[in-house]
Length: 404
Image (cartoon, rainbow, N blue to C red):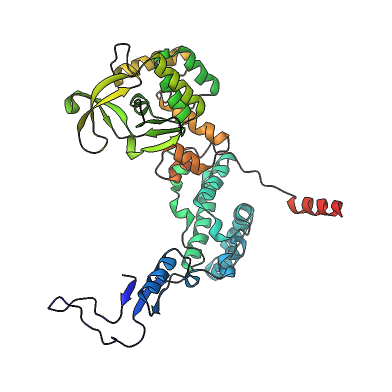
C-alpha cells in the first residue's frame, strides 16, 4: 500500500501480533510511496500517519508539488517539440525522408496544432482534425500518413514524460477512414421528419417525439411508462432505463429489459417534447399491464403503465411495428431502404445537436454512448469545420492604436 509503517513488519508473527522491524524507534515512522511528475517512483517520510495519508491523497490527485511538472515542461508546445523530435531522429533517415517529414509537419500538422501545449491536444481535437481532412476531400492514404506522423510525435512525448497519454491511442483510424461502419447511411431532413408526423396516427406520434426529440431507440420509446421511473417533468429529465422486448419462448411474451449495450442514463427532456408527451397521456391514458421486468438482472413481475399500446391496450410486437412503420414511411415519401427505420430519427436528433454546435461531450451524454470516441466516429462527417481565424493580432493592435 502507498503508506507504510516502517517500525513494524507487514506480516504478523506466529502469535498473530505485529513484529517490530530493525528501524523501530529510529527515524520517521511513516513512508508514502508515489510517482513524481515524470512518472518515476519516489518515497517521502513523515512523523505522523495523518500527514502521510494527506500527502498520499494529494499525490494521487496530482496536486502535490512533487507530482507536478514545472511550468516550462508543462507548457512545451507542439511546434517546439515536433522540431526537436524531427531533428533528433534525422540522422538515421534518408535525405528524401527528411524532406518529406519536415514538409508534412510544417504543412499539415503545425497549421492545425500550432505551438499549443502538448497536454492541451485531446482525443476530440484529433478526431475533429481527421473529420476536417475527410471533409476537405484529402486522399485517405495521405490522411493516414499525417495521422501516423502525429501519432509518432505524441508517442515520443509520452516516452519523454512531456505528456501522460497519447490522444491518438484512442483513435481507430481504419474505421474513421472507411466512413465508420456504424455511421448512418441515411438521415431524414427536417421536412421529411415533419411529413412523417403528418401520416403517423396520433396514438403513436409520441414515439416520434421521443425518437427525434430525445434520441430514443424504437424499443426504448415503446418501453417508457408513466411515472417517475421514466419521467421527471419538474426537472426536465428523461430516465432511459428500459426497453420493451417480445419473447414468447423465454419470458412468455412481452417483457422489459435494460437498454441496448447497457446504455441506461438520464437525458434532458426538451420542453416541447415534454408537452407532447403530456398531451399524449391525456388523449391516450396509459394502459396498466403485468409484465416481466429483468432490468435489475433478476426476473420479477410488476405492474407497468405503458404509454404506447394498441387501441385494445396491448403492447405492439416487433413484427406488427415493422409492418406499420413500412406503411408510414411510404406515405411520408421516405426511401424504401433498410436505413430509413425508426433509428433514423435518433440520427436526426444527433446531427441536429451537432449542427447547433452542441459540445461533443453533451452529444455523447444525450445519446448515452459509452465513449466520446464512439460519438465522434459515428458522426465524424457531420461535425462542423473549424474556421481558422486570421489577422487576430493585427486587428487587436490596430484597435488599440485607434483608442490612443
